[in-house]
Length: 220
Image (cartoon, rainbow, N blue to C red; front, side, top):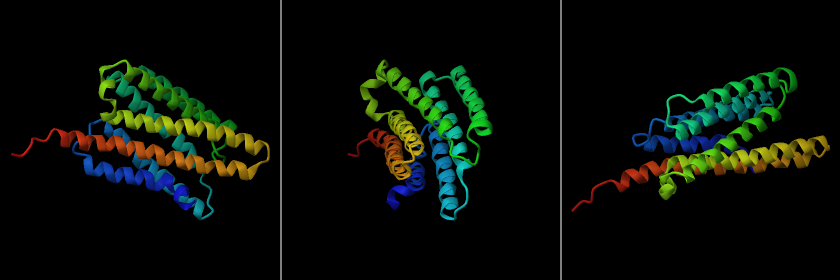
């Protein structure tokens, strides 16, 4: 179970190491994914360090939900619109930030786990991922979707967001029903979702290396 327990730290680290090997071939927008991996490694690394020492770490989960929403929604909408400015991104980011702030001040304090803001963040990301896939299916890029790094990135975000919504809602049900052990066991499912997410992100990163290799001339 230790393999699952620390997946939120070592999986983004592995993705970061992979990014370093292909950074010359990566695009400008891939830097958002790089930043996403850095943030996840730092935040969840800190949560694990604090948890191992019995120090309260709930505020870091609050921050994670906010930063995830900002970075992922920016990446997806930038990929869809291909524009330098997205009104929809501003609307989503501002609206969620307002909700996030109210949630932390009035409903779920910074010292409590942020199930409300985490579920809302995951739902927004889930819908954006589906929006991207629908847009992709209507474009010529669908003919070679398996070679698109963005397809793999978004697939990773989609899988994890779907798992996250189900786990967090089920967790609340079990806790309210005083089924603490059953609720806690759900976190292993979420840890598995993290592994899948970063495995798919890593697959997307490898697409850059494969594409570069494909374009190399044959040596005669």
